Image 1 (cartoon, helix red, strand yellow):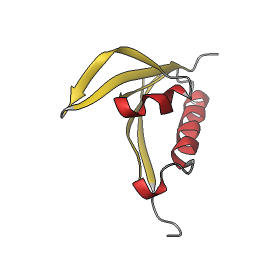
Image 2 (cartoon, helix red, strand yellow):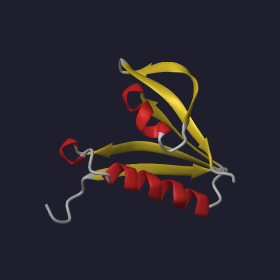
Image 3 (cartoon, helix red, strand yellow):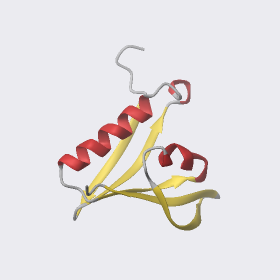
Image 4 (cartoon, helix red, strand yellow):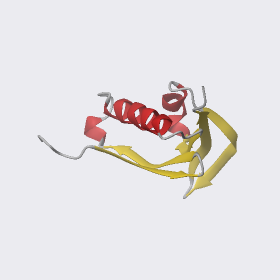
Length: 94
């Protein structure tokens, strides 16, 4: 699968804040560090653009993955199409 698209993400930057949306890795490519590398790149790229806050709505099942990168939950659980989510955020200001 040389050159195949296996992981995608969208980041929207507005007024010093970056919002991650639609972050996904094909199931057969998960647990290989691909999503980790992409998330690290998005965080560093956002810092270089002087973004102050990086945030997203995370599935409850992915909370521990995001905590490894220093993200914290903001607010309580909410649902989208019967799937539990939490808003998570991280300050990028040193």
